[in-house]
Image (cartoon, rainbow, N blue to C red; front, side, top):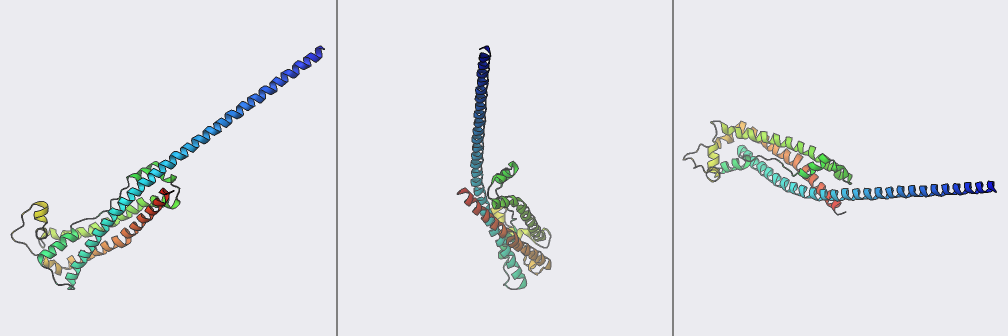
Length: 255
């Protein structure tokens, strides 16, 4: 009987241990499941936050590039106007057009060479995304590449604009000598009085002799070539890039 009791006690103890182990295992499984659920919820929230942040970035980029497109369109118009003005001067030089009077020539000189051009796009949000590494979160691979290449493209544009500016300066430098009169240009183009409040001179030195200067013609030719290259080889492809980026952004923001 004693042996039977001891065996019974031993079986009860083993049964308790098995129940305890089963209970402990169940608790561990519940904890693991809870952790996995929590991680899943956390990951889902993080993905949602990244997705929402990405959408805000895309909307902001869309506005930035629309503004940049408007600026570039205005710049293309100014550059083309300068190009046409310089071409008109070359036609006067070559005799293709009747010679202008002093006032018309002064207005043409001022409108063609007075204004330097430089593309200044809105890049604040894009720079923030690049610096924070957020560009990698954009799902569209082509859009990521376009945005990544944008900065280097602008560097090429700046180099061309710098060359154009140098050619413009070479034309303007002619008016730093005694052979030409900047005052005549400013007075007859209405700049002296209306822009800087300077009373026009009583007499003006003629600049029409520039139309017989080979140096002047060469400088204007270099300017025309640079204007043309800026528009055809740089500004127009850049406009195509902007339009494609806007197209991709519109597609992504609709999703």
